[in-house]
Length: 141
Image 1: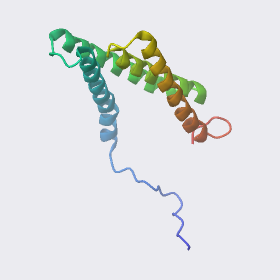
Image 2: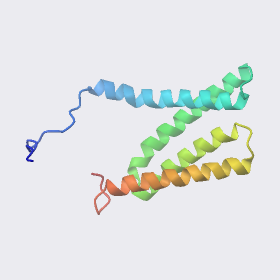
Image 3: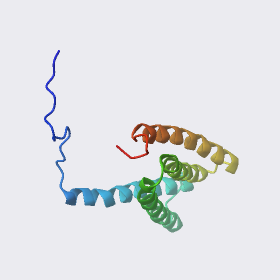
């Protein structure tokens, strides 16, 4: 069965959002992720107990730290080689997961083991993705 080839110079997925929407999403994404992460960490820490002022403070400090680290990693990672790029996101994901897991009251050894398992999986997926989306010289496609 024959299919028509796309015309030269056209994009398969047109960008229907403007530059302003993309700029808003660049800041809204980390803020939303940070709020979810902070709430999750605070909920893990209180173990279903009452919400206190210290618990709220802990949640908001966690939100600020997560957002700062996420924005830093997102700004720094694309300038790295694929191996370091994958390692940087792996360290961020493993650390974030390990922190959440440690708030449940689990032992430090178990939290480290679980975060290492998550980190290995994240590294495998990200390295494969970055390796298959670059040419032989390491330029992103």
